[in-house]
Length: 312
Image 1: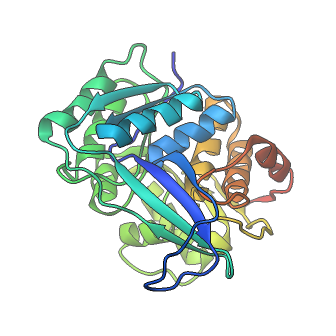
Image 2: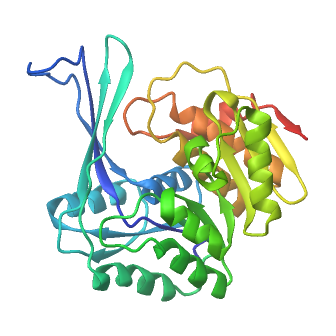
């Protein structure tokens, strides 16, 4: 049985490079060129696989970019279940300005999916036998896909006995939470959307996470707060972690690396504190690498020993 299945309705091929300085009009010549598979659930699957977990990725493929995406994932050893779409899979573009270290992220809109196309994703999920222990829905929804798509995924996962994990934003997040999910991993912006107000400090952010759990719609909130660290909230426990002192080399994939490491440890039946420790280490490790490389196992293991977890 596959432990974890990820759903990525709007995957991408991520192209990353660096230039000395970003200026208008001039030809900006990149000093490097790297292409990686991308999109929320794709990145989570990549992290779980490289850490040694058992995972399968479900995603659409369209055109030459879709074929490239599948080849890139095959190269990383991530098992895929794909379904064809008419329009081209998107390609995103990431540029680091070498003179300042500033990252620039260009996210393209991607394809529009017909109802028949996005329904194929739900059909593929339903047909998995035996069904996985965890279903992870992550990333944005492409055009043409209804806001309640992740809520539909949630109903399937719940009916078939899997834990439902969600990492998205906006109406798609609100609709799935209203359905009831086992775990969400919001950042501060996404937490603000759910809370409906702007918390002032880490204490108020934590209180907002607690409110979501205690209203019965979310089992666990893993809230990443950037320079404020992270907090993991369940009905019975609150765990806090300060950020690790790292000079970032990149800014892409920290949240996906956090979630991938967290689920890898959960699937290995680690306790809550140990899973949270590796999640914080995974998110920090992603910052050590430029472009869209995500976290590396040796960095995760090393940083996990430095993470300090405090119980409320």
